[in-house]
Length: 369
Ligand SMILES: Cc1ncc(COP(=O)(O)O)c(C=O)c1O
Image (cartoon, rainbow, N blue to C red; front, top):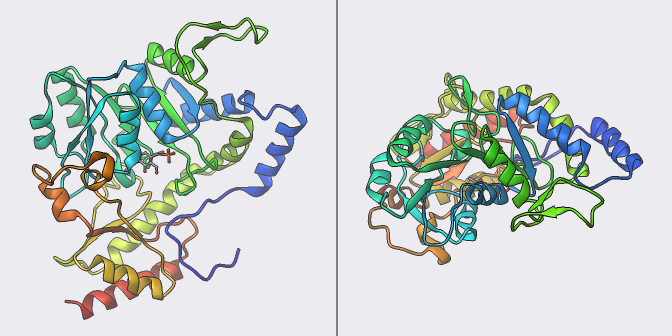
């Protein structure tokens, strides 16, 4: 496909294999969740070396289901980082619990452990660390804190599918981990998500919660509905999109790592312009390369004029209407606010694209020193 714009992210769908699989779904005449979804789950389970995988409608709903499965409810408090996509806060809110905003570390945009400790109290029941852009270097410390304070850890790994910390995949450290397959992720099923866990009870609860509280399927009408539940089923059609993308997932990871390496090698960094680093040696997969830039908006507009599309980082959660609060105790978020953005990180970027991006950014930075 010929493009004249350089994109932040775009779906890369293996059309030949996908069409073959969609034909199979159609000839089985079963577009609902079924054996293709089971096969998608079992492939993910093997890839991530995790016992149970449940596909759902989205990353947001995966976080909601995981929190519900560990019994998070009204009057509970759940800790989340302040610099995240609103989905993290909204998933907590959907359970009836209160999201508690914790500041982030300026180096890696992950939960600041000191602030986390300050915000834990008797009502705190869980922590939802967010593996932002594929970074999860602090997960082991979060687990230690959670163990000491008897808290659940539900990983928001929406942006971290196939990213590692040492010999384990992010999303498989906590009580459960949640992934998103929205179109800007490493693989996409249009929309969709998955919850993974090694805990059988959590897994069984998630299965009931996503399907009206049903246990086992009989003739349909006489099924057993043993708890409250919803309809967050995935479909065979979505699985037909996702399955072929899993076949070359390791290649996708390698491409993203190379993008980041290229940026790191060719971008001139200074106090006003910095890459937020990744630890490739530990196995982190940079879904999107993010930067700090003191003149972010100016750089964004300059690049856009050259056909280079970046993306501003989200507003900190404390500045969003439903979660409004001052920056008191969120001082790093205040410093980072309106200074972060993602550079183009599409799987389709060519060396020529990357060279152009780096040259233009360096040119801008030289002029704005
Ligand atoms: C950090 C984070 N959490 C949660 C989500 C929600 O995922 P979804 O859009 O699939 O609901 C996203 C999606 O982009 C995300 O980036």
